[in-house]
Every structure is written in structure tokens, then in C-alpha cells.
Image 1: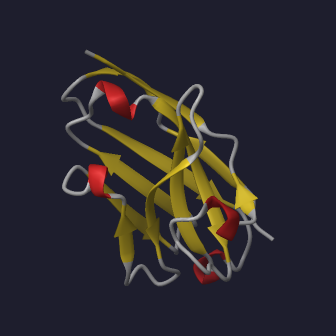
Image 2: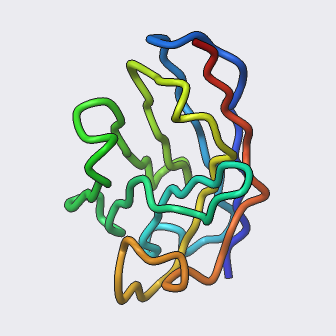
Image 3: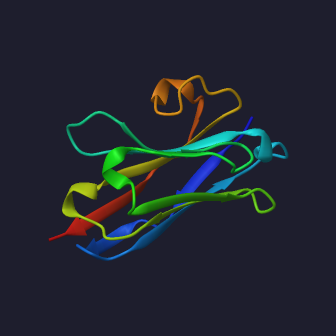
Length: 124
């Protein structure tokens, strides 16, 4: 089992950068695939990025490719989402998710463990 705590959200201007962090508990963190999702008011939770347990494979939704980078440090039990060139439409609560076996990286239903979320607000 793993517990997740996100941090790093905030209020920024369009074009700015933010780095979200996800701290995971548990000795077996390095075995978990990790994902970042986001949810804007009135919208469904949507996939942003994911990374395999080893960090060897990464996945991104098209609208963040070239702007966001997911990474992990298994020695520190941390996952990061570096977000550059932020846009107002990136405004959402961002969630970290984890699971040992992920059938579909882009599907929220593939992850059993979730953090509480961190708010990202991008002003125009």
C-alpha cells in the first residue's frame, strides 16, 4: 500500500512555470507506476502524464507534450511534474496516482491510490 501527498501548486501567470511534487510513503514505492491527473471545476478527471516504475517509460496527453515533464526519484520516494509555459486552461486540481499494475496508463480507473490534490491556478 502507498500513501500520496501532493504539493507545489499555486497561483501563477500565463507563461510561468511550476513544479508539482508527490511524496509517497511505503518501502515498495519503486515498484509502482505513477500518474498525474487533473480535474477542473465541472469537468471529469483527465490524464496528464504517467511514468513507469523504473522511470524508463513516460506518457503524456497531447496538450501538455513539450510543456510538462514527469520524473521520479525512487531513492526519495518522489514523483514530479515540471510544468512550463502554463496556460489558463491548465487551471485545475492536480492529483498524483499510483498502482502496481496499470492496464491503461491514461485511465483513472487503472490506479487504486490517490493523493488529496493540489490546486494550480493560471491567470491570463
